[in-house]
Length: 66
Image 1 (spheres, rainbow, N blue to C red):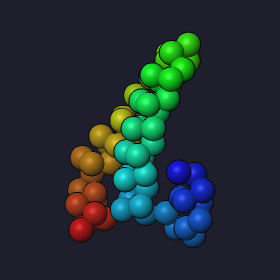
Image 2 (image 1 turned 120 degrees about the horizontal axis):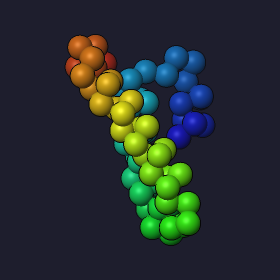
Image 3 (image 1 turned 180 degrees about the horizontal axis):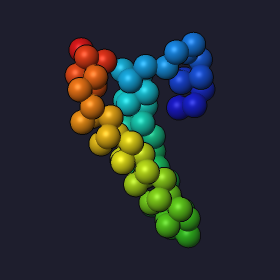
Image 4 (image 1 turned 90 degrees about the vertical axis):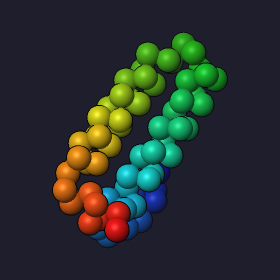
């Protein structure tokens, strides 16, 4: 995800938000594979979901995704 975002000179919501969603899916899969790290992985998922929620509620989100 970081490589895709950093490849852009100016990462935009239309690029970053789908990548965050993909990262959350990857983290959920990893959590099943590494249960000892479950707490840390859950914290990362929670923070990403928080950022996604804030972004989706912003009026600019509709324009960025349009």
